[in-house]
Amino acid sequence: MTGSFTKAVITPTWCKSTLGVSLIRFQTRIDYKLKRQDSTKTLLIKTEQLLRIEDHDFALRPGFGGAAIPVGIDVQVESIDSISEVNMDFTMTLYLRHYWKDERLSFPSHNNQSRTFDSRLVKKIWVPDVFFVHSKRSFIHDTTMENIMLRVYPDGNILYSVRVTVTALCSMDFSSFPLDTQNCSLELESYAYNENDLMLYWKNGNDSLRTDEIVLSQFFIDDFHASNGLAFYSSTGWYNRLFINFILRRHIFFFMLQTYFPTMLMVVLSWVSFWIDRRAVPARVSLGMTTVLTMSTIITGVSSSMPQVSYVKAVDVYLWTSFLFVFLSVIEYAAVNYYTTLEEMRKMKRGKIPSTFNASQAMAFDGCFHDNDIELTPFPPLRPSLTPDPLIAANQSSDSRSSGGTRLRRQRSLRENVELLVSNSNMIDSYSRLAFPMSYLLFNTIYWSMYC
Image (cartoon, rainbow, N blue to C red; front, side, top):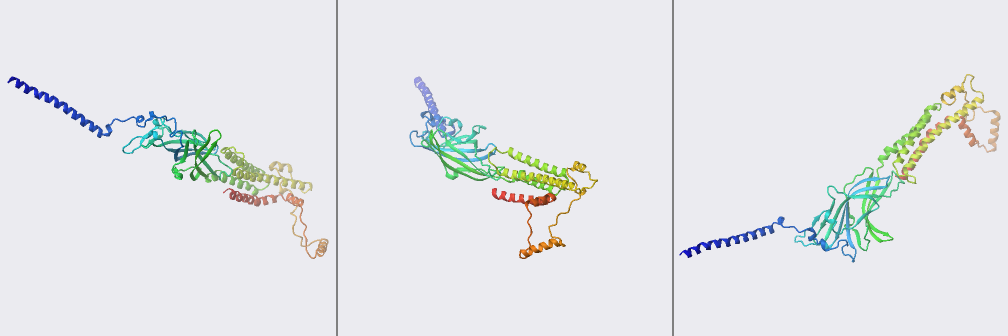
C-alpha cells in the first residue's frame, strides 16, 4: 500500500521534468523561426566574406592576361567655376562615373539587389586609374565624407562614381579678343593601362555627357559634346582618350562699356580742339594732353588683365588706332600753331605791323602772335577779276585762239599748295573737322566688319 503510494507520487515529478525540457526545446524552435523570418535580426555576413575579397588578388585587373577590359564612362558637369585668360585654364566640377564588370566580386542574391558601399571598400578592390590629361590641380570632395560611391551588382557589374573638381589647361587664341570664341576640352585617359589592357569608351554615346544649367559671367556656352580618340606615347604605346569639348563665346557688352565706349568718347573729345580758337594755346594743349593720358591709362588697364602674348589682339588694334587719332589731333594743333607763327613772322619782315604792337608781350601771353594786331593780306582770289588788265586780256585772247577757243587753267603745284596752306593756317582746322570724323568712321566700319 505504501509502496504503491510512493510510486504514484514519483511518477508525476518525472513527467513534469520531461515536459519542461520539451517546452524549452519547443520555445527555442519558435525563437529560431522568428529570427529567420525577421531579416533585421539576421547576423550579417562581413562584406569581405560576401565579395570574397581575401580570395583574389585585386592588384591585377579583371581578366588579366586576356582581352582588354571595357570601362564605360559618363559625366555630369555640375558647374564651370572659373575661366582665366591670364593663366589660360578653366576649373570644372563634375560627377565622373565608371562602369565595368569584375566577376571576382559577384555574389549570390535571391532578389538580385545591388549593394552600395563608400570609399572604405574602394581601397580594397581594383578600380580604373583614369586621370585628367593637362590638369594643373584636382581634388575629390571630402565633406563630410569622401564623395565616392561604389555599387556592386550580383553578376559582378560595378558602378564607381566620384565627385571631383579639376583645373585644366585650355590653349586659348586671343587674336580676336574680346570678340573671340574659345574651344576648350577636358581629356580623360588611363595612366597605366594602354589599349591592350583597358578600353575606355562613352557608355551612352553622345548622351554620356550631361550638364546642369550653367551660367557664366563672361561667356555663352555654345556647345557641349563628347568625343574620343587615341593618344600615342613612344615609351608605352597607344591609349584610349575621351574628350569633353565645350565652345565658349565671350560676352561683348562688358567690354563695350569698359573699353570701347570710353575710347570712342576720348577720340571724339579730342576733336573739340578743332573748334577752339587757334590763339587759345593753353586750352587746346591741355585738352590734347588730357585725352592722350586718358588713352594711355585705358591701354595699360586692358593690357594688365591679359596674358603677355606675342601677337596683336583685336582690342589692341582698336585701342592703338584710337590712340593714334588722339595723338594726331595734338600734332594737328602743333602744325596750326607753327604755321600761324610762321605767317606772322613773315608779316613782321614785310613791315606791316603797327609801331604800337608789342610782340614779346603777346608771345608771353599765349605763345603766338595776334591776328588783330597784324595787317594780314586778303586771301588771294581764285576767280578772275571782272575788269582784267588789257594786256592780260589780250594774252588770254591769243591763248584762246591758239587752243581753238578752249580756256586753260594752270594747275597749282604741290609747293604752291603748301604755300597757300602756310599763308592760311586756319584752313587746317577746317579740313580736320571733316577729315578726322570721316576717317574714324571708316576705321570703325572696317574693324567691326572684320571681327564681328
